[in-house]
Image (cartoon, rainbow, N blue to C red; front, side, top):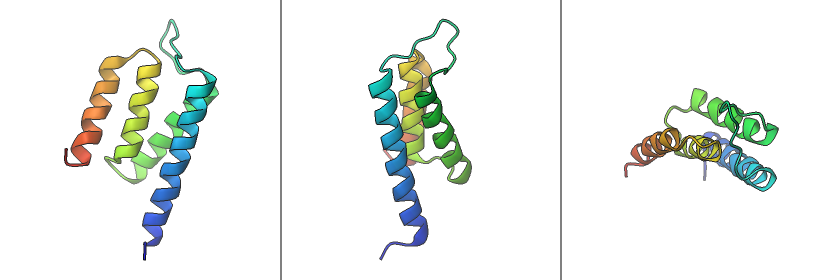
Length: 92
C-alpha cells in the first residue's frame, strides 16, 4: 500500500503533466524577445514545479517540466541542464 507521501507525489506529478499539456496546447513555442514567461499556462507549470522542488529536492518530474518550460521559451541550454539534473536524480 502506498504511503500518503507517495500518493501526494503521484497526484502532484499528474497535475504537473496536466498543466504542461495545457501550456503546450495553448502556446507550444512561447519565445519572447526578453525571455520572460508571460503566458499564464507556462507560468503555472513553473510555479508548481518550483513548489515541488522546494518540498522535494531533485524531483525528476519537476525538473523535466522546468526543462520543457525553458525549451518552449528558447532557452535550450537551461533545458539541457534541467534534464541533466532530472536524469541524475533518477540514477541515469
